Image (tube, rainbow, N blue to C red; front, side):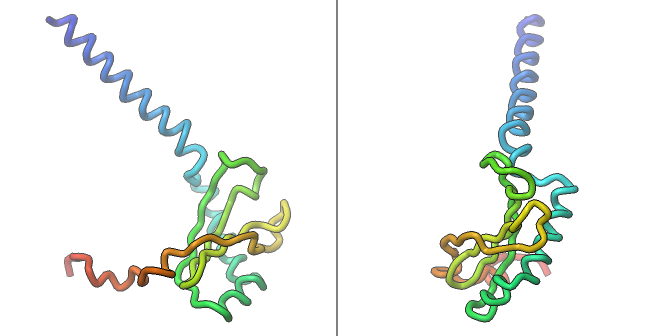
Length: 131
């Protein structure tokens, strides 16, 4: 009985460790920014807001949110796996660096925006937030 319990604990322990390592190796390492990468992304947001493409976009559509993402798994070299998404009421515009020095940000594409069919999430009218 004692050997069975030790064996079961060993299997559970190995399973948990394999899960944690696998999650880090397959997901966290490729899609979650480190603290240094978060600083780079925040600087990229400022460059995006200062860019000509963003200014033209802000004149034509209502900007609702700006978000950052990282995808090292997709391929590409530094800094091209960093992305800034600008969500408007019509579409979500994707911004990335125009060169390796990231001198300025350019709009390189767009995707569907959830705000085309939905209302903005603020001011949390339906949430039960304690006052």
